[in-house]
Each structure stands twice: as C-alpha cells, then as structure tokens.
Length: 301
Image (cartoon, rainbow, N blue to C red; front, side, top):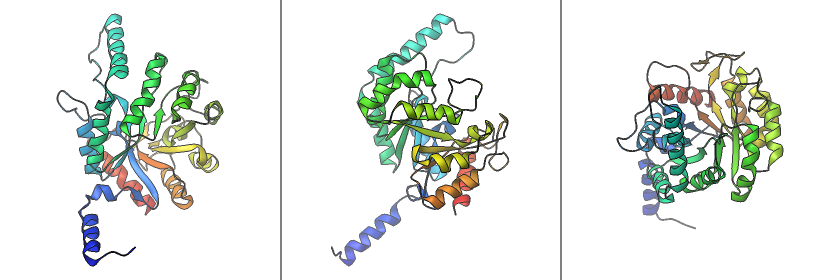
C-alpha cells in the first residue's frame, strides 16, 4: 500500500498531536501503568465517583494504563466510627444491591471516559470476600467486561477462590489473585504454595504478584518471576522491608524493584508493571506517583 505525502503528513501530525501520556505506555518494552488505589486520597467528583480525578491524576503522571480499584467507582462507604451492627449490615446490603442492579450503561460510561482520555482499564480490581453472594461474584465479571477490562484482579483467599472458579470459567475471564504478606494464615494468598493452589483450581486463575508484599514475606520476587512468569498477569511495584517491614519510598526498602524491571525488559514477557503507591509520602498522591513512575522509567531506560 502506498500513501501520499499529504496522508503521511496527516499521520505524522496526528501522532505529534497525541498527548504525552498516551505515548508513555511502554518503556524499554515493558508496559507500565498504575493500580488506581494509588490515588485513594483524592476527593471524588461531588455527587459522583473518582473516575474524573483518577483520569486527571493519570494524565499528570504520564500514565495511560491502569488496574481500576472497585471502591473508587462504587458508592462511597459511610464514614464515622461508632456505627451500630445494624448500620453496618444495611450499608453492606446497599452496596450489594448497587453492584447487582446498576445498569451496565453506567460502567460503559466509565469505560468511555477512559477511552476519550486515551487510556485503558487493563484490570478491574474486584476483591471477592467471604460475604459475597453468588450474584455478587457473577456481577464482578459482568462489570469488568462492561469496563473493557481484560482481567479481574482480587485480594481474596483460597476458600472464596474455590467459589469463584465456576464464574471465571463461565465468563472465560482470567481472575488473578493478589498476594499480601500474611504467611501465618494458610487460607491467605502470600506464599508460593498458596499461588500453586490457586493455579491448580482453574486454567482461568493467574497471579497478580505484589513484589513488595512478596519481599516482606521473605520471598524472592526475581526468582519467582523467572520461574512462574507464564502465570503472572501483572505486577504491583512497591518497596517494603523484609521480615514484614513497612512500605518505604522506592529504593529505600528491600524489594528488588530494579532487578525485577530489568528482568521484564530483558525477557520481554507480556507482564505489566503497575505503580502502587502505598508508603507515607509527604507530597500528595499525584506527586508521589510521579516519583515512582520516574523511578520505573529510569530502571527501564
């Protein structure tokens, strides 16, 4: 196929006209982005959710790919201490009703807001809990599809994961389990053995490896990534100290962030690296995520 000089000029100008954040999605061959939990402190749009603030924050950070944390698009949880058991129960039931009955057009509108901004929702972080009904589990996959997400990520446990199996298989959608560092409870996802148990449950189960939590639990993220990369969808990049240590500014903890990113760059595995800002920064979420993003880019340069 040939193109004219005018067509070439239009294509070039179209590329140049793209905002910087839309061109910053891959660095060193590695797809980068953020878990939107990083922006949890940002206020919602009055009377709405956090969609618009997240998009503006991602623009400011030069990121266009994300894992969308479900509470940011759900009704705000009632605040305040001292709520009665009945008030807590009513709030939980209201959230359940919202999840299973909200028209799918609502979630498509969220998707379209990201698309209009040149962004993608790679994963929907919808963490299946012990109190989820079957309808709530099923609805998570339906919402994920409406948002345009390719996968679901979930902080859950082995007991609940077994309940999720038929839904993941019915919807033919990956559910990637997310780890924390609680190695004392065998029902929690924290150890290589717990990951292996999830992978054995369904071909639709994969791993969302949080390298900070993995290091805090005294495991080696580099070795695990090298051995199990085919079962890992995306990484949460953060820094923590070993022996259940605190979250720290990147480069000051024990998590081998540079080594992990270097391995992704060398091997070209299709595993996304998402910033998860969780340490106590002093500059606000957007500025701290900018710092983390700059750290990743430098490591991948």
